[in-house]
Length: 101
Length: 444
Image 1 (cartoon, each protein chain N blue to C red):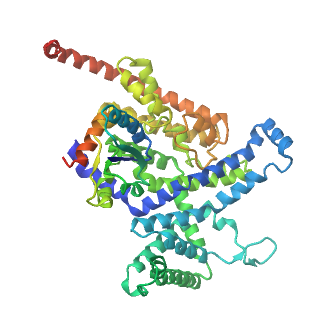
Image 2: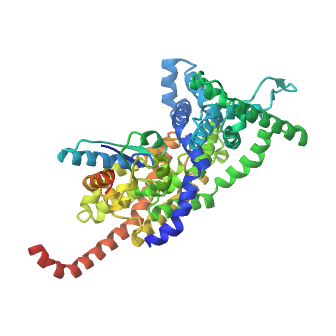
Image 3: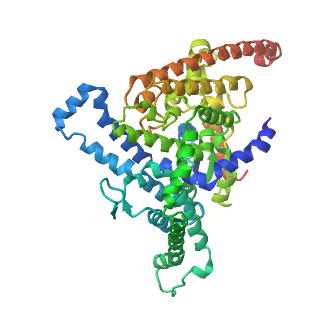
């Protein structure tokens, strides 16, 4: 599973990446999680299975959906989970999006 | 409240934040940060000797009389040609947003920009010499002209590549790379030709005035003058935090407008500084990293002040938030705090969140205007530079810059403190109300 996170500069989402990785490891889930800024997200869409957006750039959801085509799900992260860096919940969201739930 | 935002604010944020032209400008200028930073620091290192005399003497004793050559060369390679990089970057980014690979577009746009520059250079004591160009056509002075030409040329080029009649079909055996270059041959030629004719017609109509010169005079001066004013500074800061109030990344959305203005004013200051101009009134105030260095301390909303206020008045209550928000907060990253506390959509927290940065902007602007603090002379510093250090670096190593940042930090603490106290009282009250109902469930 390849989970791509995106925010303005890829800084605050990278805080979340660490937490998500820890959560994935403890559950024995094998996945790659990484974060980028919205300037370079286009170059990463192709290698991702899901794209999650920081809530502060959720105004870009529609545009990025278009860029991703129908290939992968694109969704903003719940602001509360984002703010509290709740890696477990965000990982859950990513997995359920990939499974198409 | 949420539906109101989704319905009335999101569409505007979307329009503004997703406008491909503004995005191309912003991304290109942000992509140039390596160039603007190394240029800024080269100027800084060369001129630090004026302020810190022992530093100048030390450098001279190690590297000899010509110790400033390297810094000068770097300035020449970066700042003196700033607009060129912008033209390349913007047209590349814009063409990419249309699904083009951007390479030919970038070269064609650069050609269009160059052909609009006068071929006769003004050299003192002569009537002008053919074949010489002053660097004023390439440095930050020409930035807005470069932006306009890059956008127009790229638009034209991309539109022409979509016209089927212009695509030269090669036989099937030709490698795709070759065929690709040929496909854009006619659109590229036409774009350059049209710009050439337009430039020529413009000169005929205006008795020899060049389009670039004219654009510079009619666009740049009024734009940058309007941008470097206190009302504009307050407006921008207010809008940035208004967007954040509803959970949208304000600086990101407005970046298409603010980045070129601040970059242009910042590089103007760096150029003045490099020339050793001592008259501080000539420097722009709202330039370069002004907001990052003096206002966004801890991030948008000056939330470093909030963190410190929490340490003072709500350490126990906000234990988790402080643990989560302090380390990134030192490096001006505050999303955990904005969404975690949360400040976003919270009417009480939004009062200090918006008022603190506005007041700090006024203080910083006036402090520089009145000459109490040295102006920003560095075009860019990373926005993650911690509070205080940012102020010191931005002003070219003046302690007054660090002091201003710290005074502003103190102001933000004072503004946030009562709100930390009030929300604490409110939480206590709520807890008392809820507790009788909740106790059984906790026991069960």
